[in-house]
Amino acid sequence: MPLFETAQEWSEQFLCQGFTYAEQMYMLEKSGLQVFNHKEMNLHLKYIGIKTFMPYLHYFWRKDDDGLYFKYISWGDVYRLYQFNDELRILILHVMGKIEIAFRAQITYQMEQPYGCFWQNRKELFKSPEGKILKDGRQVVQCVYTEIQDFMKKYFTLAEPRPFQDVMDKMTFGLLYRIYSHLKGYREKEIIARELGIPPVCAFSSSMYALEELRNCCAHPQWIWNRRFRVVPDPFFRVSENTWLVNYSNVKREKTFYRFCLLNYFMQIIDPEFNFNQRLRTLLEQYKDVISLSEMGFLEEWEQEEMWKNL
Image 1 (spheres, rainbow, N blue to C red):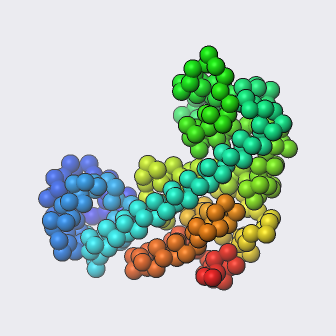
Image 2 (cartoon, one colour):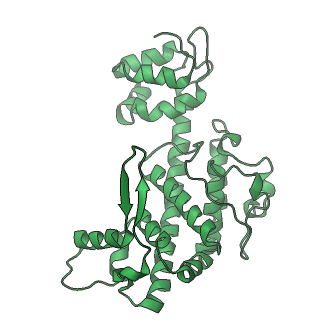
Image 3 (cartoon, rainbow, N blue to C red):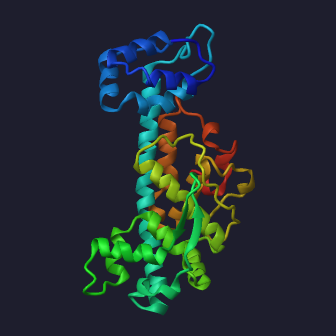
């Protein structure tokens, strides 16, 4: 293979060759990667796949005039970084499951109190359809009320009306978010946001949108540990008895650390005994030899923040 200026160019050329497992190992070793257990590496390539490992190889890749892009790096380092991401992904999905249940419960309760158990069938409670331009230039019309009705037709018979309590369990986090964001009544949205700890509706809504993106990346699954996320949530001040960042303005909100903070904050409200703080710390300590806290957007003195103090 020729010399490359960037890891992206290198990986694109690597992936388009259609190498066998043995050829993949040979080319990686030729690029400077140390392989101490070929049998184990072959197993990883066979059941995980080289494409999955590319983001982790990118992290270690360094430009080299001799084509030795992975000097002093072993396949064990690459695999450990993959393991960290995988365990982090599972932890986040665990937490997101709890947040999703709480979100469902609050939407259900706060809407059925004033509007009854079948409120999802009342068209007047939702905003009018909105036009949206897709990346390819196509225009689509978003109508959450229609989306709910289509969902009901797909999963339930309409002969007998179903209360929202009966249908919410089958709804995705994304649909729940769209239902919340398209509610016409600001008062109900504000109550839901306050009950979950972030009264400013715009900050709560954008935070949930960011967590939806995070959840989708974890569920597919994708690499997340040092990802730069597309959704940048609105900042907010400390708004309850639960601890939030003092230096929130210094945090890069497109990075993973800010999402850790959101998860930690919500868990203080939803399930304080889960101790997300300690679980995350344990994971960071276990893989400290291959990860970079700065890559994830951690503040230099993050452990001095009240919400991250190791109590």
